[in-house]
Image 1: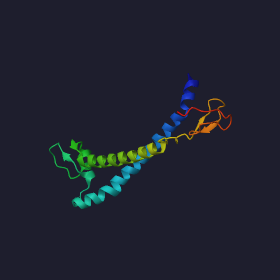
Image 2: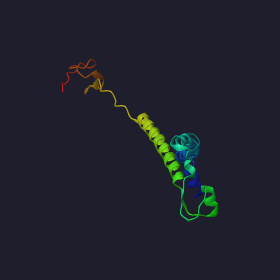
Image 3: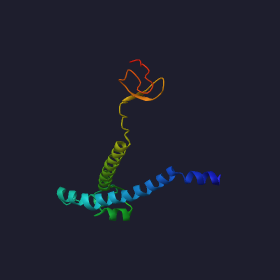
Image 4: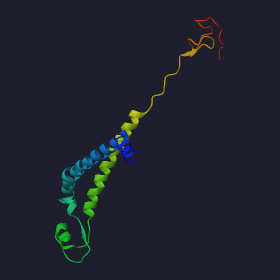
Length: 145
């Protein structure tokens, strides 16, 4: 059983999957940083100096200045600002994955083979032009189909 597991784990597909997961996790951190540190601050500034990550609805009835204070007090909150950031993260990730899949599909697309220009002589099996009526090798008369 250990031998079978080792064979399975060392197959190319499993190793490729592991590398993909590691790169995907690192890419996710880059996208989160892009959204939280580069995209959302200017958007918040344009909307009126709003920090999306601090937007929340307090459900406890008490008043808290920041989301951190509400979380520290254990208050129930709806963190719609963090949800907006997550939506932007998802949109960017989905778009990048779409572009990658589109590129991979374009590279994988099989080209149609060119139309044949020759055929085999039924008598000597040598290659002859499609329009030939006589084989140049064995001089047999060919049926024009």
